Amino acid sequence: MTSHVMDRYRALVAAGELRADPDQQAGAERLDTLQRELEAAPARGSTLWKLLRKAPEPPRGLYMWGGVGRGKSMLMDLFFDTVQIARKKRAHFHEFMLDVHARLAEARKSETGDPIPPVVESLADEARLLCFDEMVVNNMADAAIMSRLFTGLLEKRVTIVTTSNREPDELYKNGLNRQLFLPFIDLIKVKLDVMTLNGPVDYRRDRLGDATLWHCPNGDEATQALSTAFFRLTDYPPSDRAHVPSEDVVVQGGRTLHVPKSLKGVAVFSFKRLCAEARGAPDYLAIARKYHTVIIVGIPVLGPENRNEAARFVTLIDSLYEYKVKLLASADAEPARLYPQGDGAFEFERTVSRLMEMQSDDYLELGHGPK
Image (cartoon, rainbow, N blue to C red):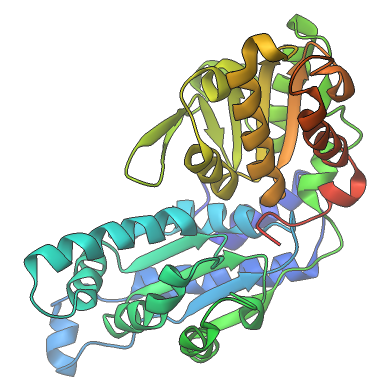
């Protein structure tokens, strides 16, 4: 295995897995530099620290933003997998903030003062490199604490690398009490290098190609087509299909939802797991926030006889649509015939409309996240 980000990036271009892309190459070069800086930095409490009589300046972090499918997560994969340091952590930004709020709740129980410093202290003890996928801010609870939280982390010498579909000035745009969030935007601009990745190739859309998104009917042929799409979207070797990783996603309130196949922002579920079990909007929103693409197998024809499953399916599609998640599915009927008649068929028409729109080029070109 090659030892630096640029070595691995050039190997992918040479193998034809990536196309030449100046923005992407610039991002790889910047991450290569950061890797070398992090690996060369002296350990805490080392002799060099003592000679300097103060902690050396930490390597400067990076904020990479750009349209969907431009390779931000791919570069983050290369960087995080390649950098050889202790105390590194990577998380989807939404999951990280859920963890932060849980820590703050615990700190409020045991501390009489400000709960943010002890949370900063614990995070800095766990990682000197924090990497976040898809930074997005869509609630006031996050917005209100982010400036103080990240100021504290940077003061504790934590290096931060994050990706986002939005430039810093667009974060939490039109949000409630946005003035509380503006210091965080200023902090990003001052403390992190801001880079744009908006090259000509949407790799995610490119890998979908002209693939059929809705397969009908259910059966071996549909399952095989969706399996092929999963391996193409994730670059995972089909020969190793028995070892595709799974994951447990944290749902609001601390529950977890098991994801049978989860890789590089793509999740695979059965209809039964999502809609036949007792699920609700928090489960579906957790999925929608975390995954840019969801594959669902085994959708049956719906009607009054499976009203509960149909209602959950409507909520699921609403959540995926809100976050512009790409949907691939197998079903026993096309969307227009999925709920053919009976009580509830009229209300299902909005879901049919959304399922049709979710197969359009305009929808597929949208970035992941709420609009």
